[in-house]
Length: 255
Ligand code: PGA
Image (cartoon, rainbow, N blue to C red; front, top):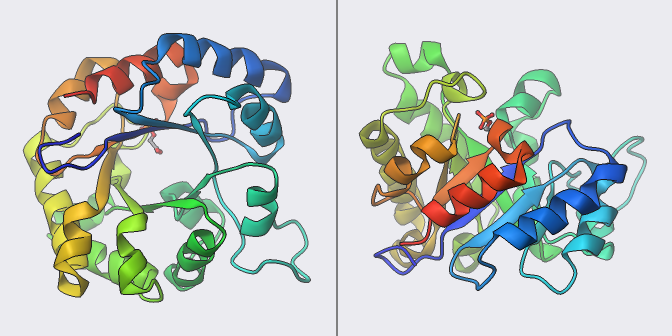
């Protein structure tokens, strides 16, 4: 638990990496290395094709298997899309929403996210909502404005009593995959701001809300970031491709 009683979450985001053929071995290795006692919640966010294999390999453990996107409707004429109901049906328990790579390359919008976040909750999936400013926005002093818009828009249709069931990942875009990590104090400040935005709707939910940091988290820098008061875990990209690194970061989240 964090000092405020929130259970840390460390989630590995494989992005477009991983094959069905190697997924079981990865999950088995991760489970060998993890202290799977529930102190830290651990998740792997894998490509659609690897979800069933990951769910199967994680069966009987606490490891949460998550997708990296979903459509907001349950069914319909949306060729190429996958719904929350379809994910839940195969045993998936979480979903990454609004990752900056999807915002940049796949036309993900805050408007769509406003429907996706509540749809995920309704299907029983843990939504991991990604927000964060670009380098230009940071340099122009626009970080808080960007975060306010993203957080308020995406959570707009989430009923107040369900707000605490959302996980928000603060991922400054300039820190993703670049090896450049936000200064821990700067990250903490942005994350405190995100918590305060939720606090405008419900103080109680803000106290329970888990906010993760993402952007070049590695075993070497994890402890320092995770020690910040508003950091409740990490969303890990590149380093999560090695189960030993993800397990080490999860260990750093035990405090
Ligand atoms: P990174 O990615 O750890 O490779 O920087 C983080 C993310 O995009 O979630």
